[in-house]
Image (cartoon, rainbow over all chains, first blue to last red; front, side):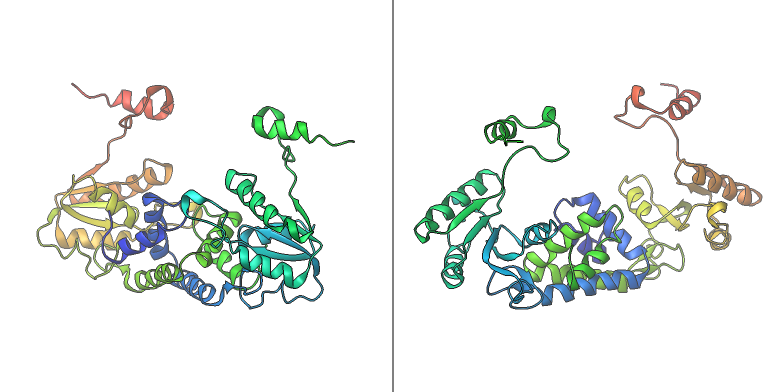
Length: 197
Length: 197
């Protein structure tokens, strides 16, 4: 529909997850229609963030500083390492205020069919970090999906000889959920792992 | 949830229509996680488009050149001016391949309660353009909404002394629509304006 720079802009906006042709065109039109300084600020803040955010050499999370604010915070409990799939998960867990330990970001979940093996999930780096820090507990905070389960099983089996407590997040009914709309798999797990009151 | 440059980026992304706090955070995380060059290209294409797109001095549409490609195209039929609300509407009408005339972009629809009067919809400029070009037909391709109807009535009444054909888009059932799910207003119009077969 568009041409020239507007077409280029819509093409570039289509890279966003969940943004198709039509939405990209609408966003492109919005960006050239609104106050020019607001659009320029957006572009500049993309450039600033992209330049400054890099993977922390200790925990792999995307951060403005290296080591990141968690790895360099001496107040945090290095006896516990929480292993997550990506940087966003770190913020989500921080938001719960349940964890004062340090993190390790895998970057991926194991998926042999997609060519994602132990190297891609930075397993060696995790193992080195564990040997160096000697934590008491490794919390595998990964999705209860097929890839997540594979990754949990792989990491747990590899770390077994180290004699550290290895835990994972509980599965069960989500808060505010409804048994009627819960998948049979979730309900079955929640039943099997029922808790004393 | 975020802080620093990532928080700034999410704030700036929230300006997009339909993007709330959560989506903005997800998009910000996406931009710093993916290949840096792709994100830089997006930022650069925002800057390029914002710099180059300005309102055409003849028809008001946002365009890379002034006059725009429509106003400077001598092949187009200057006997017909299609009046639209905004630049996106020009592309949507071009897409139908039904119109070979020239355009005029109002920028707004009349809405006295929001302080949008004849000056804000560039009515003087439209009137000047009509006096200069002397078209045979003015097509008011505006939304059949309260603001659209007000604008159509205002422009039609003001242009009446000029003795030009003034038309508007037909209203009726949308193609592929279903009578059962059509608003009573639309159905009533479609009934009143029924067409011979």
